[in-house]
Amino acid sequence: MTQAREASSATSRLLVSLIQHDPHIGDLVKAVVPQVFPWVAFLSREDVREFVDELVSTIKAADSIDNPAPVAHVIETWRHSAEVLADPQLAAVLTAPSDADYGPVPAHEAPE
Image 1: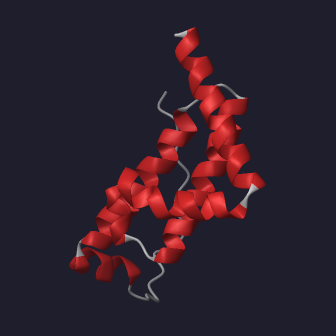
Image 2: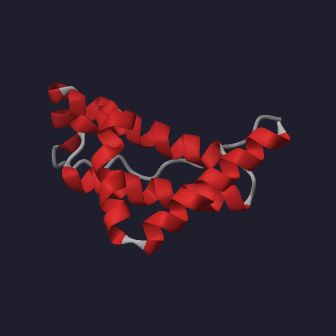
């Protein structure tokens, strides 16, 4: 487990450093993202850029605390966004402007 963690950490640091060192590497990463995450086809170009930027910064931060969970969360969240956008009816409902105000959300009380 320690060896796998060290290899993952080194790979993360290398990727982040390459992207920060040369803007062309960042462009290359954005170009290959659809091969790694095919579901980005349902995101806009701007959303793909945001996904990559968030993913890279989260990889760096998660490595610093030795916890890959935030990286998995970023990927899962963006994948769910793509799933919504892949369904035109659902996307229309969720992105439609709305003036509805359902009032304040009551505070959640912990069970006793």
